[in-house]
Picture 1 (cartoon, helix red, strand yellow):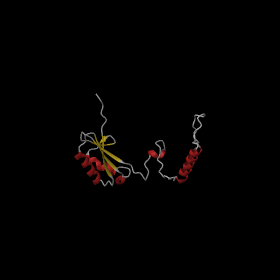
Picture 2: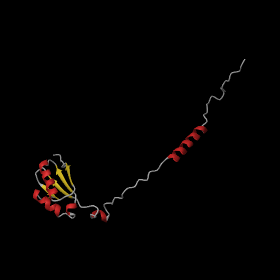
Picture 3: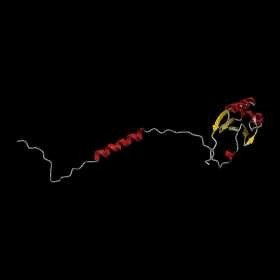
Picture 4: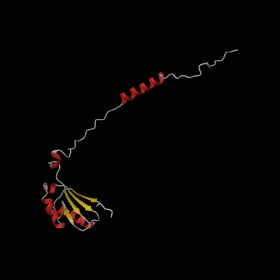
Length: 142
């Protein structure tokens, strides 16, 4: 009669050989290190706020003219009311003149018609780049 294999019952504990598993992990690690590609990302250094060059406009970056239109029908530049008639004067007197980008910014409940009139005045002044944006007014609870 053939003798059957019977596990040694005296030990009672099964051991797993970890060597093949560790070998496999190291082979995978080497594979991924060898096949990894590195991308050289080039970027532009941005000036920090404390640097002197950030405070002064350069020839590359013309000063932006911001015209605000509010819900009361006022046209403002740097916090002062200039009216619709002052738009061309402000643009022509800007540091870069007609080359300065112009931003027409609606504040709160500004009227679209008035914003478009300000944009048209900027075009008549010869502004090359004109953007129209909207900014919500901060509401206070009361």
